[in-house]
Length: 384
Image (cartoon, rainbow, N blue to C red; front, side, top):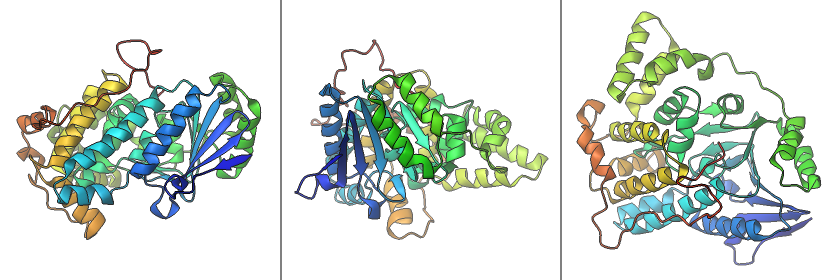
């Protein structure tokens, strides 16, 4: 087994193991919960591209060092960028990340992501779009962006919209944390393997020397089992979730939940209402529209649309909720953001429409994703 890294300190954030026909990429910022820096994104793109072109490589394994797979993007840098008014640097980061995600979503070779720990935000982006996602009893998945004045991005309007029923709306709007069993039940994970079996699984994958998805799936299945959902799991609430989160607007979703709460006392309903009411009203409205639109579109269209909206959010010309969210959650940690507008009823449809307009900057361009010539037109097909 060969493990490679570079001496400049930057690519040490991603370690590479070469074992037979398998390349294992290890996210290596454990103190930062493997949050993706710009350097990590660039390095991963370089590694994925080189491995796709290398006929000796049959499979990619992606995992994290420490107690997280990847807790998201590196948030501290964008916050200071926005504060200084240099939104283009933040846009560059998002563009590089989305381009990497698109490569992963359309990758020719099987990718096995081992999600043994925290999987949030950008961590979901670089794994959920891949072919195989292995959850464990240590997995924790969330898209917590609405509580921070953002919206679930990284192509999540594609993968959340494809979860059973309206579970994607529930997960994306509330940011609720799902465990490994729930990830497996809803399809975010393709397999569930106990963490103590992961070394044996990796060894078996290294020995198989194939790119055949059926053969790889069979090997992972040999080590996996169907986990039991905990008693209080929201996945047991699918009937209520489908009834409430299928509503046309955020206002109707909340009022339907409140009607249910009057009918019967249910701590889950109460906590769901609280999660929605603590989130940024603007973020909720953007998120709901994105997920609804994502159901009908390919992963490429979802990424392009999310990029345009994210650039508007970075510019802060329509609202400053991103700065307030970062202040309350990341910087001062009082967890008491003051959103503006303060309620969903104050956010009009045309307020959301503005996030879909072209950026008023002569240097700005739409996200240009690289051509992947072997894919069927008109949309790229991700592997969810």
